[in-house]
Length: 439
Ligand code: GUN
Ligand code: ZN
View 1: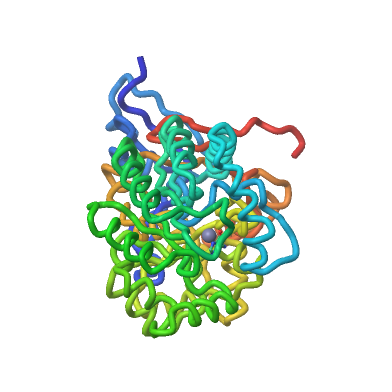
View 2: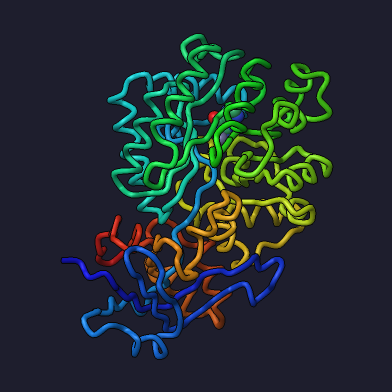
């Protein structure tokens, strides 16, 4: 049988706090480290020379020296049903939705299509080292079943929900007062809290829900303890102007969600670009989180996320790929673009802060940091084994680096899915990259 205790030896990096608050003390680094896993959870993590002597006699050590071991990545905003429209050219948000997104989402009325895409999507997450994701499905209840079933089969943590949209969208993607409520309640009953799955009430964005449906979303979120809420806010300037027309009484776009009771712990808003400081303060006060989606924001020409203001006002922030407006499933590529978004505003993103955001920061934004995001004792052992020599260029740049910070920075700027040698879920291999020759 499988031994209950396993040990993994390699260079270990994880976070105990936000480097923006605590500096170097936020990062735990063991150049020759040992991660001890018991029944799929972290039992201990520290220097190999201290911990090797404490292992049970029958415990073999999986020697990954030369590799970097980190907690699995957390993608706080993605659309599984947009996998097939990634890299669709030429439009900004509103035209992009009409031209590419809505026709693609229509196909999820077919459960066989939904199941096929869900399987591909979950496999993409794993090959990119992402072990937890918060994803939109489509308006179709069966699209949620397909995603949860695929995630459950892989033992991944997944937060997802049926999209609510009952106006300003094509007839073929519209729900109504009755189906929106009965479908959402049935899905919560069927999936929320099962294994590692959680439900998210999912109003697409304020323009595509009637005020009755916005009120329903707030009620569903309030009535079900532990249920999440996900939406989009202040992504694109034309969208912001449209919301001002649709909701003339609101102080701001964010205020629309506030009015309908949609801000609070476990509510996650993608983009958050065109906000002011009263919006940010309101998000902080309510416990709502922002998902920073740099590849999407640059691809759609939406704008630049202001991490400095979000942090100054104490808002929880995670990172999202936002595929299919986002252009990569890789959190490494996402960090690369996050760095550049901040550069354009004169802000700095250190490698430590970046990897914090991709792991513990994301977990905190989803209120999951007691379960995932670090190697603190008791955490679920979702982890990645990174090959810092996966490409010739990265190997060369890393060899010239003097410090861990420099090596992590090279990894985030030059790395991609090729660097993810292995992804483990609850301590078990879920993806292993075939060894390439002469890469
Ligand atoms: N706003 C409303 N729907 C969407 C979507 O599917 N993608 C993005 N990026 N923004 C949205
Ligand atoms: Zn999105």
